[in-house]
Length: 171
Image (cartoon, one colour):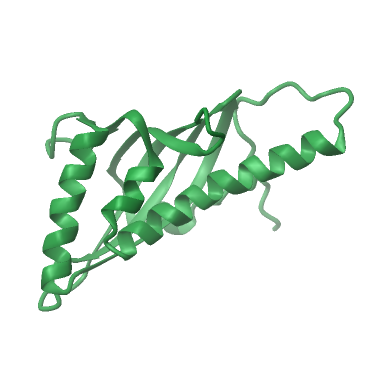
């Protein structure tokens, strides 16, 4: 049985006269948003907090899993990530992240993604890797310079099976 393609719950009304330029522009924007996930994963894999700084918009917030931390601003996010990355770098640790976006809604220059993330974290070379799965909501907005940046990020625990069985939307 063929899988049906999941469609976003909210879509912009179809244009009656969609030009090639409009399609090309939307395809490029979608690619830039997808690259944001790749850059986010790469920054963590390289333990590079400076690269993360470029991915979060000024005024961005992170709503961490219940009980971990308070709502954090971009500065607090980066401060916490820097401390974690520095400790991991010193101890031979590593981070590997993978994402599955299961739902995407676009509202002009704002995109809201829902999905699952798998994290494989080794705090030091002497410790076994810890694999966890979370569900997330991520809000991205086009910045004045044209790049897409994270505006709000939240996650909570999820079963590994949820990640394994989810379908990635293509937009």
